[in-house]
Image 1 (cartoon, rainbow, N blue to C red):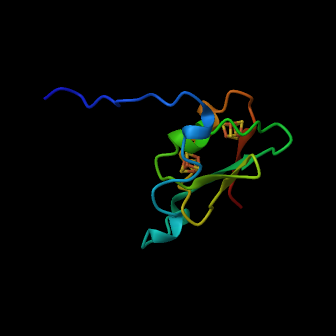
Image 2 (image 1 turned 90 degrees about the horizontal axis):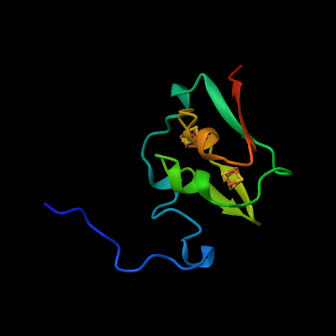
Length: 96
Ligand code: SF4
Ligand code: SF4
């Protein structure tokens, strides 16, 4: 089967959705208990590029007022958001 190709590639960041298809609250089970580290965003460094939002496998990052925000009830602590954040605005901290 041929891979699906988008008919139109967004020409600007304004065409990229600013939230996931479903809000995190649609998930039935909170999975924050899986975490032993949590991502923490330095809002002064965040440029609102949406990379973390696009790559988060759980769709728990939203962009509010031009800054990334994480729903910790559903973040499993995988660290992908930190890896894809080019400005280095996300650090992982040990859960206490
Ligand atoms: S990838 Fe980094 S700079 Fe971009 S929105 Fe997320 S936290 Fe902000
Ligand atoms: S640590 Fe993983 S699940 Fe949590 S916000 Fe980052 S990418 Fe999403």
